[in-house]
Length: 114
Image (cartoon, rainbow, N blue to C red):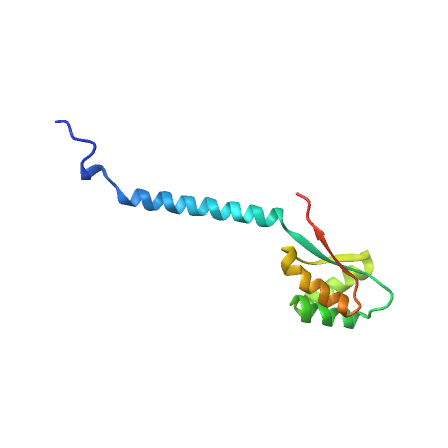
């Protein structure tokens, strides 16, 4: 017996759903890769002016760090001369950089090279 391949017995609407899900996953992966390529770093530089407490307080208030994160970053900044305190898009980091510099803390945004 020969069956017609165009009969409804061979049509599977769930295949369309699976293909749509796969396409969505691929699009999300592409978006993540683009975000990584456009990723920037907020760098805080050491100076001889600001106290540990001031830098810690600023990182907590401006960069939404926990107390422990801010303390660790301040030690790295002190001993290494600078530290990356946040990563994200330039647009997200710009207000943080401005907030830190408004407080007299030396901060820059560096574009991550991929």
